[in-house]
Image 1 (cartoon, rainbow, N blue to C red):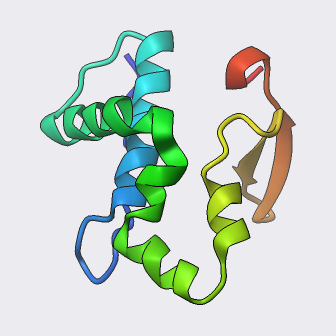
Image 2: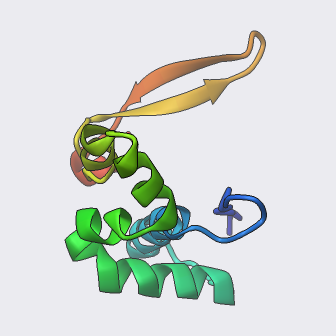
Length: 112
């Protein structure tokens, strides 16, 4: 079994709602595709995404980070960041030389 880790960046050492929702979305998607064992952090993130994910924009807008961005006029950025499956591409980090490339993804975001 391959091991994957979803880490949250947070802000000043605090957990953030946006990062938690993203981690939950990743755990939810991977759990639907693979046999996974979750730790408590992953379960909490997935539960948060399952509860808030259908109203993702509203959930993100109520976060501390988004409220600060909204106050600065970044409304379009918040809307853009809340879109799911907008592109059929995924970024891939490559080494030697270090670079980011785009890889095609298959149906429903499954990497081909």
